[in-house]
Length: 447
Image (cartoon, rainbow, N blue to C red; front, side, top):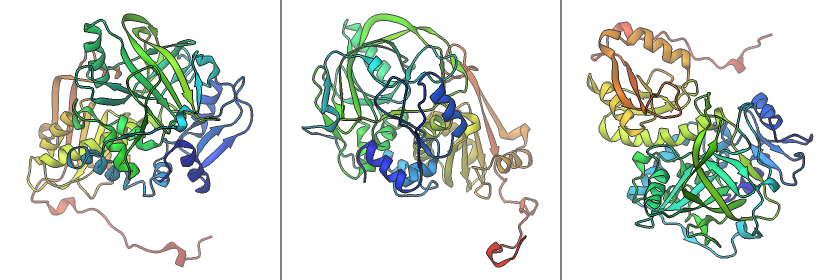
């Protein structure tokens, strides 16, 4: 399997899933504007960016078929592939290895200058250029266990970034314990990696306790130990095959303006005084390709696929009959649709509660039977209006913890809602769906 971003891009190109933008493009708004027009189609590589010498690629995650080509599977099987990888953390974790002569350290920028890197300004009201998908590696201040996660990073100076660390995230926990000691939290910021590392970084906290190294997920997907390299200025390692590594530290007791930023919710996260990262050194491959995530389908797929895996594992342990999990694009990553055939009445409601516990960012959970296509919004809506009795099949949970980037969440809390859209047992004849003869259209002349 291809182990770095360039090899993944070669694989996509061979499969006809990579397009090159050869017209010169401005990093401020124009690049993202092109992505917005072509969202969901081929991966885009911008070969000529004004004032920059390195190309930028975007769109790897906005089409599940693109990812399936990299992982040699189908789009439908992706969540189960990721689910098995998440499960490996507890069943047979494979630890990463530290290697020498890392490709990511072929060139060094000892005096960091972020203006020399092609970092786009995405949405029209964004506060500045953003790294939208870098993988951050930190170490627990007490145990040394690695944590791998993704947080937005706004460029505020040549060697300075603003960072959002969400409530409840492991990186925030590490930072707060380091800050109590008056210490900075050392990190590496890795850009341009194989998507296996991204899956590891977006594994839900419920599936990856503080004492677990999520890089075991990447090892499972790669079929060999994840490759790290020793940093020059900080304790956490970098990803050896990344295109770019920034070594830095999150400063204690310092807050500076960060935002606005067009977030996963489809709305802007407002500007506020947030945490600050000082970059100490930058290393990179020769002729690196920088990787950016375009807000929208890329976020919904990247968060969705890994969250689906975690929800499937967690809910599947508690209730029988679960078939699939899908985080709908219309609901950002706040709406999970569960497909299941409950062996007993009431189990769908248990599944709703288990899903909220497995992925606390959820705002809504809908459960449908296996004869409903959970990827088809019309089919799901039909199940809602024909199988859900509002008087007994809607669950409302008031004052629950919610995701702070969702505008409906206030002071960390909001009501959550679940819909049981499964047929009551025993299944009545009135729920028999209309079907037609299956024919092969290639046998017919149709003009």
